Image (cartoon, rainbow, N blue to C red; front, top):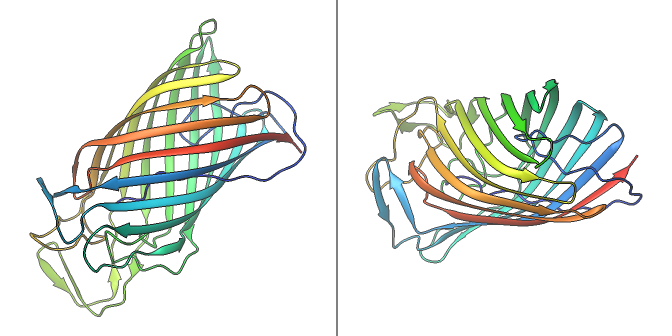
Length: 296
């Protein structure tokens, strides 16, 4: 019921340097004038889901699968300010039943990450993000929808400590996500135990926080991580009903990430598993990708 981990695919020419690819939730930066374009394939599957707090399966769905490919460039505007972009193509399917999956371009997302403080191995970072739907997908056909069709704005704080000799680091982040209302192809809908006679749906805002413990060296990186995400409010999936954008989706996920990048070309991999949740599938997800570094 949530989009799978995104993936990035790349094309570029000139390359230089030993910069490390970075994401909107880490403390890694591209140097000024450096660009890392990442290309990945992602896949997420689940057979059981939480209907509110009830964990159950549905023989009309079987195994639900979300796959994606995406392009994510990270651009060094300066040594302490980076721009990160992401544009995914996503498709969904199930192994049983008659529900047809969706496919197409989802949302264009962007983040500005700024290093506020860096002293004695400790660093503090501020991240501002936004997303804009580009694809003409249907948001109220969960769990087959590839997105929610809402515009978003997010703010994130990241704190990190890295040991200068061993490369051992601990990073924590917290995010708040503002979501716009959306339009649905119906004159009325039911939510919060009442009927709304409108085609405009209020999608709940959301937040997340996470911890990462790992080792970052010049040519490789490995980490274990845990994340908690939830909506600030919302209703629950009604018994034997389909999910809806007003649902309070919550998930606790644990996983591993690894990367090897001896020079300008690198490989990365990520796995995740939802250990607990509300109104989401208990998904197992993975992604694999290629990283390519070059100088403008």
